[in-house]
Length: 366
Image (cartoon, rainbow, N blue to C red; front, side, top):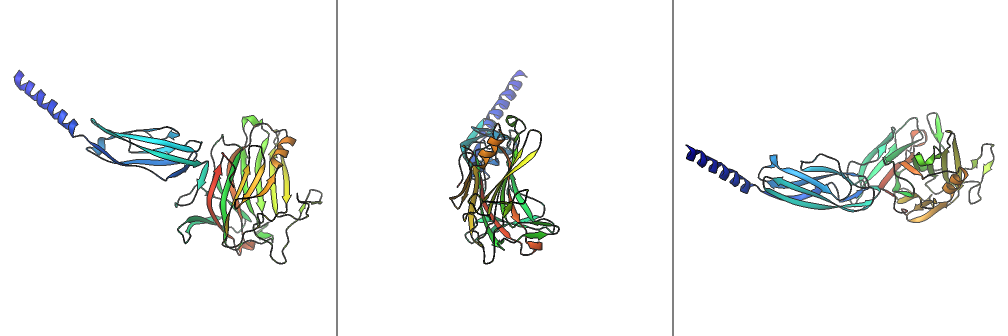
């Protein structure tokens, strides 16, 4: 009887050995949802392979930068990119029994943030009363088309929230803009009971940090009339609280660019600073022509604007406000908004082209 038991034990060992020898892994590809990524972006990655037993195949993921945010053991993973641009490596090892194979992939993080709108999903959120659709140009380039759809509001925004408590100046944002239809003029807009100006606006909403001691710049706005003056049109004049005209930085009574900085003092009081400019640098939009506009604050706290790669405005307003308020700590950015105008009484609503939205914390975007 002992010989029979010994025989079956040998047979079982041989069976186990032969099963191990039959295990195999063959990795076809390690894929990622895209080829270029921005800082802190969450990216889906996955492994395609052949295995002797896919159901029981195990997976181990590693990376040399960023964070893996899903549980181990699956053939897919979510990688959150680090907050510093560079090239990083993701690696996955697949295992079944005694067989295993490893594959790596380079992950290029090009900037702090971008959205080229090449996919139907995008990271811009729309304020209520705003509609958007994805469109394609004749060369196949995809972009976001936006317009206001409101019977009560003069302007509406699209927004990108950065969701990074450590994001601070120096910082730069840039977007390619244009008008598909109804380039606005300088006439005031009335929608419902509200009135306003037919301007474009970049806005940074800021956040407080412990280093600010509850006294900080809470909002920065760049507002401009986008189109050249047509016959019979005039730009507006600015007035102070006493009704006196405020001259532009160039010495004119009228202006076409407005920079506003709002400061929150430690007691909670908000103080707003204005700077007006009369420049022929940003008011060049015509129907069907699209150009980049960037807004930046550099490492010396200069306020900079570039249009189509050329410097359009340079100001010391941030430095001046911080000095007057004896502001401490850094300037922290919460989100970036693009405000677009409605049509007067909801008619001739401007249709806005948006593409190539970028943000950088490693240099001024031109």
